[in-house]
Length: 539
Image (cartoon, rainbow, N blue to C red; front, side, top):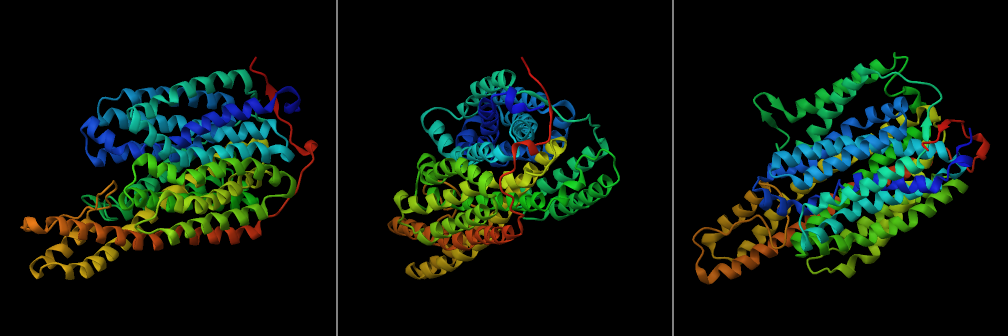
């Protein structure tokens, strides 16, 4: 039946956007709270890393399964269940008394987020005809852009003026409002027929994604080598890939596969999975190095750092809904090509302008360009991907699309971390050798060795931090001078290392932009072309 005649779609968009806002915000808002959590819970950095890794790992692994569960039980039911789990887990995060409790609560948050995310697209596809979905996806896209990039700004504000626990308590009233709105406004959309759950597929997909994502997240920590005994990071990743191949082979012979392989016969759907992964790769490739740069090189507070990139999220939030409407009218092909190119160009300009004396105003226009590109991508990408997907497959398709995005982010973080560490080690060494000529000969070797050791021990993030220690037995009269030289070496070395690191993300975005020439551009589709769905109003 015609859902849009019975349901006002825009309150539904608002409710689903609130749910998506929470889960995307919590992927980045925790980063700036790391020092506060460390001191408050008296824990180690390794444990704190799992505060966000535990969330991302659980979220990424369960998306495909959660999408199919939405097909079986109905997306509204899964969306509501996800909100309940996520909101309760957020409260538990804020109430945590030690690192173990916080990590456990974050894992549960990841479960809730995975239940929420795939249902959003399924619901919007059911209540909007193809000719109007771009506008709805534009709002969802704006939420993705704004919430992901606004996380550090909002997190910095909360940590600066309140307490890190309010980062999590913030979700509670939002979750309650979204839950009430779910049953007030979201219709009980049912697919055309009932589905079974491929349990073997669930186990294979979950195990393969767990191994791949874990290996990529933890690779840098273990220097891409031994985890314990005979177990290594490459072994874990290879095992994950092997299990994924087995999963694909299994799915091809199932009557009710977890991921229907026929989805990938749709050229646009396949291309948009790659494009989504590239976009999230690019976001990590820009966000991580720039965040470190603004705090460690320019000495900004977390709040000031967040405000520096705010023009990107604000511009993306403004542009995305309009891009969605344009995708409805003219198709998304050229919007995607232009958006990915602008996204990469803005990032390249940011690094070109980055110096050790740059200010917030230096980056306003480049981040506006970056945000314009991001805003042009997020809505058309979803519209193009889902335009020809039948409602009966919407949950599975949405789960796959969200999973590839998260994999892109995880691969991006791993790649950027590895490249940045490698380039920083080289740049710090070269800068230290040059600067050491200013020091007494007896201190030159120790000075260079201090930076070599700092590069091996990992990146240091924070105002005035370099990770390098002063040479031993430095005369008191030289301490101030050597500290100035240490700072000079670090900030110049980091700027040099940042440029090729961001260039990796720019190159990926450029390839994605060019690949969109293969998109089959379809213009506005008549409303009556929409496949019918069964709707039972919640009231």
